[in-house]
Image 1 (cartoon, rainbow, N blue to C red):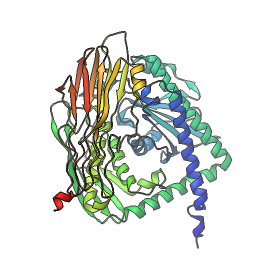
Image 2 (tube, one colour; image 1 turned 135 degrees about the horizontal axis):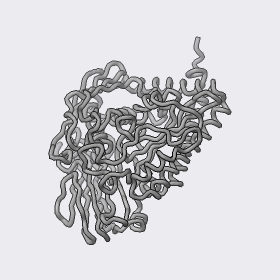
Image 3 (cartoon, rainbow, N blue to C red; image 1 turned 90 degrees about the horizontal axis):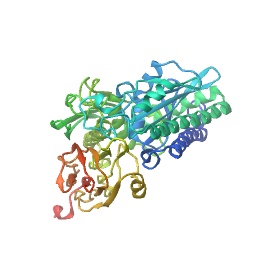
Image 4 (cartoon, rainbow, N blue to C red; image 1 turned 30 degrees about the vertical axis):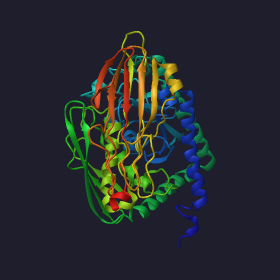
Length: 526
């Protein structure tokens, strides 16, 4: 008879908890190294990066609390990357190809194998967003219609082989950027983060022994699967369908539907995106790994805080999306906004479906956009690139009102401090405040968005990739919708997705959407 106190694979609860915490601490230390060594505000100040550990098969073993869209997509795609390449001690593989394990081109991933002697034990991985990956427009988040317009595509390739850097690969990447020195600094920081993670993980394996470490990874996944199953089994069996829409694709197509049918059978979840629009001309397409990240995120939010960040948690969740649809696009469809905007709408769709099954546990729609702004110098020889996302209103729930002026769901970044922004770039922040009254009314009101107003001190180019400018974040259980966002240049309205040249003295104003409200107001009840 199994000893109940021993838990999974001979690990008792305390031993398994310590094992999980030690893995997570390796990821946290990798993140600290990456942040402290990076050159760009995008990584150093906004924290647009993620770190994780995978086992030898490419299954997620641990992650830091970084960016959900980074980590969920890595968890979905890592197994294919592991099988594609040969590995030896001292390697580091680089990639950003969305169709071969990446998300969109600015997100560069570095993967380092971890060996014990001759035995491959796992991988340490980090992914960081680079403000420049060689697109024609500054910030490398263009209003594009093909992948090649978005910058340099890096298929999985060894950047470091057995400890020796491949200078042809290295120099080729740097040559594609406007500011090679900044790119070199950030890539070196990523290499360093993986080296630190590899050292710490090897030390843990040596201390515990390979057999115990492998058993710990299996036990962690078994526990994660069991804990997740206990939560998923509480969702009533049935099939729940919901449709939401993207505003536009930047190329003239509006109201682009994303539809999901969530089928629940005794704790097993099937998510089917049949009914979603075909891939479009603009860049709101995404690979299935990005859609998977959105799905995984919603179900992970239903689980208790102690749920480990491992592959076992998602074993009872399966996805289907027709090839060539918006969330399972075919090469070479443009994807720059798919990672940031479409992934966010996938969250809304899955939450809308689950609201039919477990209405008391679902919140109204949040602001629904990362409110992406990319910009940089228009003049040759005066090169600067910058990219940022902006918060908005959080959707309200049965328990509480939504928070105001925060990042929600698929992103987990900070804003760049005003002082850093103004010191580094020819910009002045003229206004930065909560957009009062933009949250939807209800028994619990949705959070308010924000207003960020930038004055340009030099000529520049800007690219905006935003959502919820035409279609408002929805309320729930009788709550009202949040207000749509607005983009303004010198007071004149801009489309949700656009590229413009601006002159010194111009003013760009971004008003982000509010979150949806939850429940009828007392006045409506009367």
